[in-house]
Image (cartoon, rainbow, N blue to C red; front, side):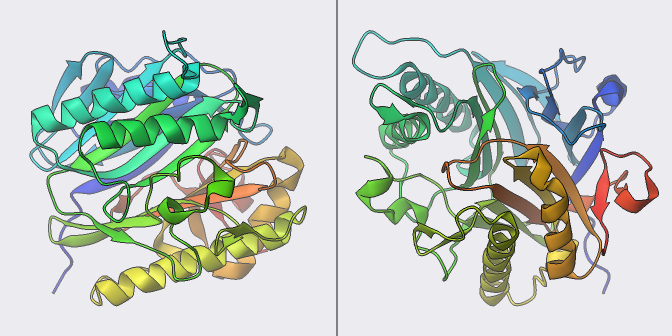
Length: 359
């Protein structure tokens, strides 16, 4: 039996081509990455413009999600969104604003952003979030006596609790990365389907982290699994060199990359155990790799190619990671369609759309 046509497709294209999407009814939304963030020509489509560097010589890119459902655009306060019967993609960008109480500007802005998101999802009848993407500057800097990533975690969890949402077990996949500038940017993909959290047996669930990582644990699952349109899909959170709850391989980007991939392999194995017919594979995922230092890019590419042993679809970005000692973070997704536009980095064609080739 042929597999069902994917209801969801991920495309990556140069930001200079974003305007051509305006007439495509299939576009849900996405995010564009450049340094500095560039003005977007996306009309009413929900797209983030994130200040984030790409490898030297590579053009600004946009990550674009498509759906084969009939779609309609809308706004809810500062949120732009686009939805079909099954899926909703939205994004919100807010400048950090100091509140009238003791909260830090980032904490208050994060809580406001997530409150608005949950209000929209409740209004539109989307009870499950597949994935959150969070970007804000100086993620590792301490202010108001607390690291900014920890301030973000407090604001995020407060919004979850305010809307009666669980902060353990039934939480979405997510990432949080340091951008080069601007305010808080959040994109999200929601569904009316039931999302199953997937945890990693090699790691303590992030929502159970001990207090040494901040007054509030991070509110995310290691991955989320969902069945849409007759296909199993997997959304893997930003994954780093953490076993249990501790960072491993300080200062060694090659070993950190391998540990990231061991963790992703464990998540894939757990997802396949939960859904034996899903058949998720490392070489069939779409990857987004955040590298702290540009000079480590070649090492990360090499380690990925050697570990996976086959060409894979990948985008590389330079970004600070949620712990100061972490040098690389990798997120991934699979089960949806991928493309068009992914090419082999060894060919030199469309350099921002890369496949990690074997060394």
